[in-house]
Length: 452
Image (cartoon, rainbow, N blue to C red; front, top):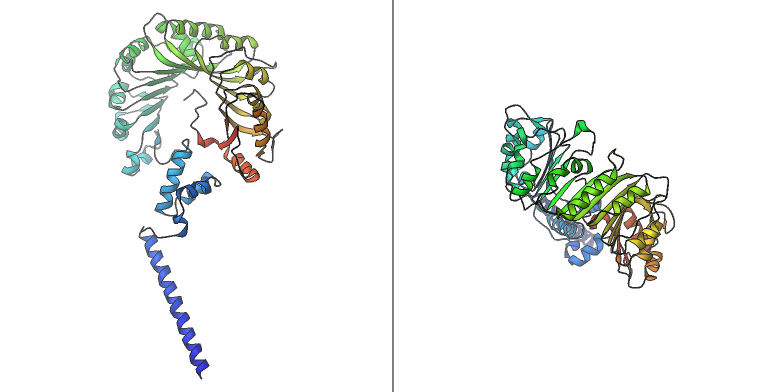
């Protein structure tokens, strides 16, 4: 009888424990549904522990993790912000299309208030449509306009748009040879005291039918000496060369880009650039040249003065090389292949600090490990299988050994796609060696093209 009584007591106690457990689960569920943070063992970890753990996760995993609770969202957001600046969270930027203007109107006010960058894509725009997004213009810091014109009698670009951009730092007008942005380009006759960077892109189309000559460009730069950077194409710069030659206009940095196969040839462009540099129009030059087929073209490019950053895209049957150019601090090559002799390049560019390769093999960065003492960063967009790279894993110890062979060499950070980073980390259990370290591409904001 006592055994039966004891069994009943034990069952009753077990039922009470289960009830207590169920009540606890219900309370936790209520806490979650009420957005009340609850205690969890993982949340007791130190922030440094979180960071060590996060290094083993993909960015997709981190995005999922941040949705678990408020505390994890804060920790993950801080980690991404401090470790992966190339990853932009939230509604920092927006694209406005004429057929999607309703989507913009449906955004929550909190999201709208976060917008700092806007890209406008309209074939033709009316005041009614401008009124929809005019409210964000005072807060926008970067504005890009692509192929649009104001409807008849709808005002001009300055009065309708630019006048309201009181915090604008960067203005880009794309495909400007098609755009009609007000009679006589009135916006070029206005003061815009906050703008620091202007970009004008005619798609490097060439040909007299597409010639966009803007005599008032000189006036615009004279009225706005705060502009430090000007970005444009080979073609637009060439046909507006006389606007700047002999002027007192000065910018700190000129970004110029385009194709090398136009009928006017690179000799005309390079001669103009040297003239502009000698008169003080620009101090530093960033150039991106595409479809280079001849050594002669490459030699002309290298002869341009003030060159600090050079990005090259080859289309040659011969192996090309670069003459010594100590001014160049950053070099980019879209695809190495058999186009260029990298050993000679690494020796010639004795002061290069950053190298970006769009697609290539690990062995194609070895010349910079062996010969370029000042290189500190190398970025590879897409890696092909080859020596020192197999099954998605980079042989970092071998690269570190190559770097050790160069006396006085600086430590190099190599940025790669996330899949390669994680596979290498899993295989080697470490990515940081004495002279070489590996990071995922998102760990750096690297603008590797000038066509903003």
